[in-house]
Amino acid sequence: MLDGRTIAPMKGVAGQAPRGDDWVYELKWDGMRIVAFIANGVVRLQSSNGRDVTASFPELGALSDLGRGYDSLVLDGEAVAFADGKPSFGALQQRMHVGDRAEAARRAANNPVIFVGFDLLHLNGHDTMGLPLRDRRTLLEQVIDDGPAWRLADQYHGEVDELVETVTAAQLEGIMAKRSESTYEPGKRSKAWIKVKPRQRQEFVIGGWISGRGTRAGRLGSLLLGYYDHDSAPGDLLYAGSAGSGLTESTCREWQETLTTQPECPFTGPVDIVVDGRTVHWCAPDHVAELAFGEWPDGQHLRHPVVLGRRTDKAPTDVVRES
Image (cartoon, rainbow, N blue to C red; front, side, top):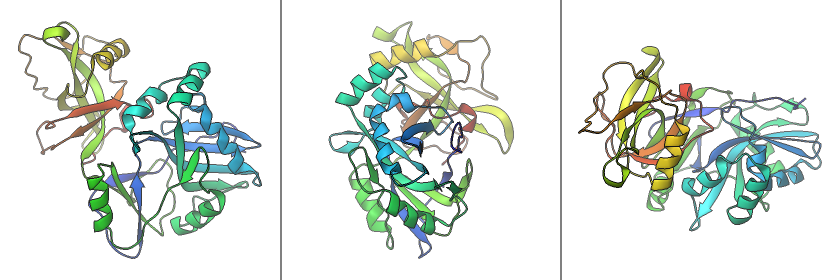
């Protein structure tokens, strides 16, 4: 029943932390969204854009132990790598793009990930997505206990301000607020799940690059960023600004090798770029990066953006303005 099946994960919207007895709260893990299909001792891992990423995370084959006593399980969660005791998207970057099994196993030995499970989508031949979150959580707690390659995501109730303060002080990504009566809506960006982020961050489509200065003269120096506004301009890629902070010599080289240049500008509308003698290279809008930034005022570009890394688990057409 699970062979070849894919499930598009449910997504949340950005906003302020809601309050009330009908909301529960979880940490927002700085990882890669994973749907884990477990049946007959076999584990298959799917990214949020439907790719099979089982080969990238061989250590998560241990999730087969969770399937003992069950005919079939589907879990929603995150693959998370750690650095200095905290979830690190930078550490995960070294794992998430690797498709060669031998290389993935070598990297897993030095930089392992764990699976943090926060939802149960299927159990013993029956989808559970139509159940309210509180009931799915009860079942999930029966299925998952902390193990060598996985853990159950903590869930918090009651006063949220202290949790937000703790997350902010620890420089974690944020929290997810979830309505306890909400059903699971595959592929939907639902207001029943709200992302609360102390530091603004989201994905952007790469529409080009500008050559750098000094040691980067003639080579990639900064990325040109865009997003889709499907409500007012379906299919139009809108320009959000450029970013060079966060790029290293190696990541600049990787981006330049990855991006496919083209003569046409992929952005719709004005693209206000200060070139200063540098060269602009337009690219096919096929790749996505995650960035942190200070502000994004309406009608203006991102302020103080920092490139965190490439996202191979995100479809470019799914990238919209979240804040």
